[in-house]
Picture 1 (cartoon, rainbow, N blue to C red):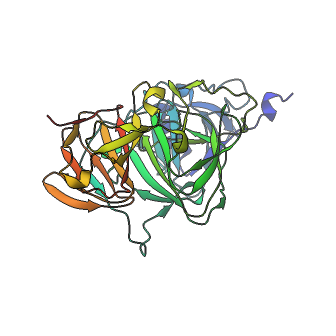
Picture 2 (picture 1 turned 180 degrees about the vertical axis):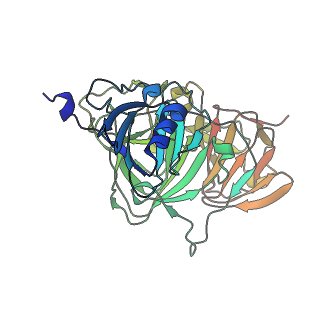
Picture 3 (picture 1 turned 180 degrees about the horizontal axis):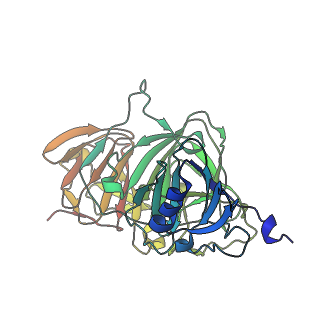
Length: 385
């Protein structure tokens, strides 16, 4: 068993010319307390602990290991950057920034892990797929290519990505989870093998399949086909991806009814799904089950051109919605979209996101036209009139 003086800790070490001024700054402005001074007759180092954040400056062992700063007197000031996170600051609060005498920036922010969802700032957003010769995919986590389908993020409330793994094979991923409100993954092309907490052995998702990833469910991407394409939609746009170092996958426990953050995991298999007529005139749809699993928070369905009512023979049904978000991504084929007074051709991987109250119409659909429709809340899209 380790004694206090053997315990390990991590400190920020800040070099400064004026030790007294730096100490006053951290004590009076930041809320730290003095833990140790060395040597007493001519101090060259002072260790301070974040007492305002719950740290303990006493005990004779240099203070609580959490939230420590070591000030070291020297011939020059060397500016650093210190982030102080405190539990008593509400999630989403504005970060307070201070500047120490040696030029160090000190930020004081919330330590809350609550998901902060920014206010919605909707706009009519159209993103067209790049030409084959173009490369609009940036490199993201685990070497995957990312293309933004919602560049303005609607004020940071939503993110939508077209993800590409060009070469396939083993994916350099690790067990992790996301602190999110909503997140779904839809396979648009190819296949991918994944594994999820409490959902049994790894499984393969084929084109047309999707999953709902409830908040904080542990998962890992294992391998994929060359040319894998995935559509990922989440809320909020910026959220933590947290590496898991304790739980290994697959877990020994299988609990497919488990609730994560108020939601249940969904694995939608296109080959097993039932198609029914849609409220969108001229279309059939297959529901992914996300609406039920999220208690109506969100929904997703795939729409196809109907064999009985051909959209290509008419003007289509005028649609609108009154929710947070309605996003359409073309999976295959082509069609005309009329929205906001203009009409343009849409093809594979083109996407459009509609603000509430906007009216739009899909028409002149090809026989292989297929569309992913995602809404928050579930089923807010309706015909006009």
